Each structure stands twice: as structure tokens, then as C-alpha cells.
Amino acid sequence: MQCRVCDATELEPVLDLGNQPWCNHFLRPEEVGSEPFYPLRVVYCHRCATAQLDHTVKKEVMFGDHTYLSGVTRSLSDHFRTVADEVNQRIGNRLSSKSVLDIGSNDGTQLKHFQSLGYDVLGVESSKTTANIANEAGVPTVNEFFNLETSKTISRKFDVINAAGVFFHLEELHSVTEGIRESLSHEGIFVVQFLYMKRIIENLAFDQIYHEHLLYYNLKNIEALLNRHGLAMFDAYLSPIHGGSMIGFVTHQDVRPSTDRLNDLLKQEDSSRCNDIITYRNFSRRVDQMKQRDLAYLDSAKTAGKKIFGMGAPVKGNTLLNYFGIGKNYLECLVEKNRLRKGLVSPGMHLPVVMEDELSTPPDVYYVLAWNFKKEILANNKPLLDRGTEFYFPVDAGAA
Image (tube, rainbow, N blue to C red):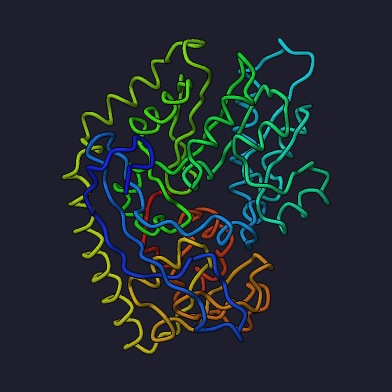
């Protein structure tokens, strides 16, 4: 294969998580056992240092309809509000009217915060279910995949373009990036929010690797992609959301100078060697050590007669469950708030999803798959903590 960013062919396998189902393919009970499996392997490009998957599950399979909702978690909505406020401060009062396009806008949670600031908003969302939810909530949303052709169909310029948790999903990477360049006004700002690979490695958050995430960016390699399309990042900061996400501010090349904050982050990447192949080889070794640690913990809990539930049914949790082999041998169920997953079964390990507000008795242990919302989970479950329920976080990233 060719590198998804720079077209090079000097690619080295660095992490093999085996054959896994598409991890957002939650099943109806009658579908159990019928889900397809695909290779889940990470390769490293020796030219541009981009980590990426070497197998693509078609976007129509993964994103034509799904059950993920941005608005379920308060922490994420609060983060989106902070982003909207910061972008608005950068735009300032120089415009009499302001517009924003959100790519992969989901249920419209991010755009609602821009609406409250007086922006004319438009979402582009590939999932029919979530696009309908957004439109019904008063957030204008086009049910399409965004790419260069879609940008020409929309045929307008935007002061702000946002892509939160979607820019690393892109099968049509270069068409989408070119569409962003075409749709961005001359002094406009493209806000790209992406899981930061440096933090994934530091946190050992390998579960954030799954088929929907085709690319794993550090600042160095996303800049190579942007520059290829006449764009440039001029500022960025690291947010705690999802265990460590980079919030990058991008514009047309040569429009804004780089900030000291961005330059400092780039220097930190160089000094940490996070873009070196040896870092990825060590990451793979540490993932296997984590697997042995967690299975030993779960074995001990089961031997002690403890009842164990999974906390949350996030997409990333299925990477962990399938690679570790954690199914009904350890967990009785996955406990969720998102009602779109009510009555469904996890892909691969076939754990039933139950609603948190319908539980009759709590477990002795929660194995927390939604670890990136640790602070919120612990705050919401203080009575259980007080009565002795244990919350075990396989990844402890000091997350929001």
C-alpha cells in the first residue's frame, strides 16, 4: 500500500491487534455471530512518520448509520462549548455575520454552541440517524459524506470549518482536505480536533486504535498533509478530552504566522522522539504487558467471587475487549447511557448492553471502558464508591 498522507511505500508494521469486527457494529441479538472480521494492523511510514491502518473498511459500512451520539456525555459538550468560545474570540467582531461548517457534525452538539454565539451553522453528517436527530433539534444538517464534490455542491465559503474527531477517519483524505481548502474563506479558520498519537502512546491507550481511525496524527505528520493542500496550522493546544486531543487552528498558507505555543509543541515532539519508529516498537511491547496485567486482575476478581460489569459501551472498548479476549468469561454486561444501544450486543465478544438506569443491583467491580470520562464517572457514582464498588480503569490518563 501507499502512505495515506505522502504516498510513500516505505511502511513498517508496528502493532497487530488481530482480526476484529468493526467495533461500532453493535448487534441485535439475532445477528450475534454474523458480524464480519477485518485485520486491525498499524503500519508506520518511514518518510512522513504517520501511523496508519493498512486495511480500510469502507466508509459506507462504518458511517452510513451508527449509534454514537456526541450529546450523551456532559464533558464532551462542555469541551465543545470551550472550543466555540475560543474560536469566536479569534474571529472577534470584525464580521457582521459569521458562519460555520461542521464536518462529521453528529447530533449537532458542537453546532448548538456556535448557534448560541450567533453563527449561521451547517452540519455535514454521513449517519442518517444522527443527521435526523440534529435536524429535529434545529441544527441544519446535510446527510452526506463530506469531500471535494460535496463542498462544490454546498458552494459557499465559511468563516469557520470544524472537524472534531473525524479528520483521522477519512478514506477520501485528500478529497476532504481539498474540500476544506475550497470552502474556507480567505481569513477563515479550520479547527481540527484529533486524538494525539503522542498521548495515545504515553497513556498506553491502544484501544483508541480501531477501524474507524485510519490515521494517527502527531503535529509533524498532520502538517505534512495540510501543506500538501495549501493549508497550514498556526496554533494548537492539547486538551484533556478523550485522554489527550490536539485542538489545531489552521488557515490558508502564509495568512497567519505560527504562534510560540505551536512551536513549543513541535519542539516537544522532537525531544520526545514520538515520531521515531523505535517509539512505536516499544508501544507494541507495552500493549502486550498491559494485556497480561489486566487479565491477571480480572482472573483474581473472578476467583474472589466478584461480579464484574463493563462501564460504558464505547466503540474503543471493543478493541480492548476483543484483543484481550474479555467476554462473558469475565463481564456479565456493558452498562450504558446511550439509549440507541439499548438491547444490543457488543461485536466480537457478544456482551449484552444494558441501560444504567435500569440496573437492579450494582456489581462489585466496574471495568471502565469509557475511561476517558473518568472524572465525570467518579463524580456521578459517588454513592457506589462509598458502598465499596470498585472502579478499575485499564487506561488512567488523568482524563476529563
